[in-house]
Length: 208
Image: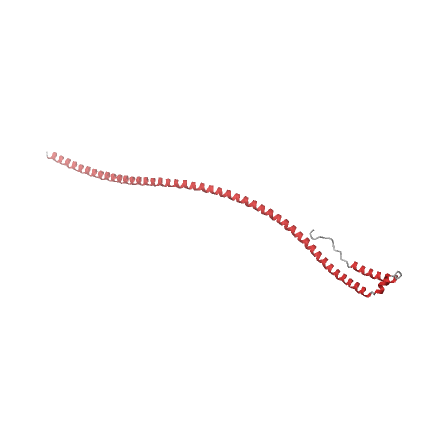
């Protein structure tokens, strides 16, 4: 009897000990499960925050895409406008270059014509200057001849002053050959001297 009671006591003690160990295991598992649940909740909260952040970033990215699209369209329109202006300026520049080349050609033609005219005028001036120099020389020669002829005329007057009336009357006599010859020789000498001192200007007109 006592032995049975002792066995029962031992069984109760063992069962109690086993229950306490099971309770401890359950508590440990509960703590572990609670920690895992908290970790999952924390991860879920982080994931939700990350999702919200990603959604906000996506919205910002979409807004930036829209803004960049608008700016791109605006830049494209500006580029097309600038391309049109550049083409217009290029056409205007080509037209101005063509007009300038034509004007340069006109100026060059006029310059060449003026150059030919200037050369002709210079040739004409040189010719007139040569004629003027020739005329100056002729005038000087004529002046010198005039001085010489004036001297001959003075000699003729002096010679006539020396001839008296008797000599003139003797020249008119039919038989006064000596006086006539003397007078003719004197006249011939003066005539020869006048002929030698004559001035023959070349027949050259200034307006040739």
